[in-house]
Image (cartoon, rainbow, N blue to C red):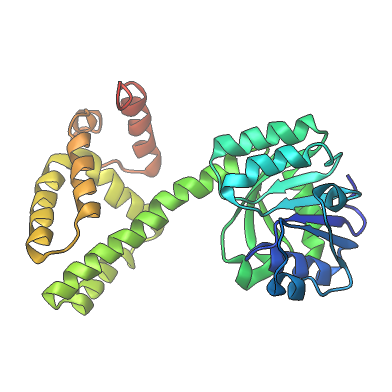
Length: 301
């Protein structure tokens, strides 16, 4: 692995993320950028590869030959198979898998790449690569993550190291998506309900008053922490919410799921564990979650 001099980079996959990242690295001074994708090559692929440092290859073996740094940007469902195919040719290169897959899949990809002599790094892209190109903020984890981050910073890559464990970057992206994707659907459900009532602007202003006045950690403690000891009351409130949405003809699946979650929380002893008051810190909330959840039967058992 040679990342001290301008590296030869291999980009596996040449889609919405692969094209701007490959062109960005070529423009930033990478020695060569080998590109491989499954046939066919369409006009947008040919246009994006029109750079003197970019080499279109006919096979994965050709793309990986002499590469110091490999970026896998295929599809989630083909990420593991791509790693298996690449492992025979990856040699001592750093193999950064940027596909959105589960942490367990990333760990398996890591084992496959290590078996082939490569250095696996788990990656999770945080922003649109089609906007930011190779400079897109990316979380990475693995034994070679720090060295990779420091070496590629000179070419403009923003690789933020989480840990030395393959799988951590993908795990953070997954748990972050619980919030971000859930928030998307929560807003959509709330806005549609407010539209039916003719109160969209009023609702948004009211929500802004709740969320804009507190730092995120304080907001998480206020909303999540309080829910642990008032789950019964929140469940009763959500019953009215679901009933109202149904009467308005609004799809209530997000609210209905929240109702079931509050009902589920009622079966735990958080009220007793916390002395009937909300946790005073995020650390106290985590301690209560660890003590109660880790000693309770897992769902479905």
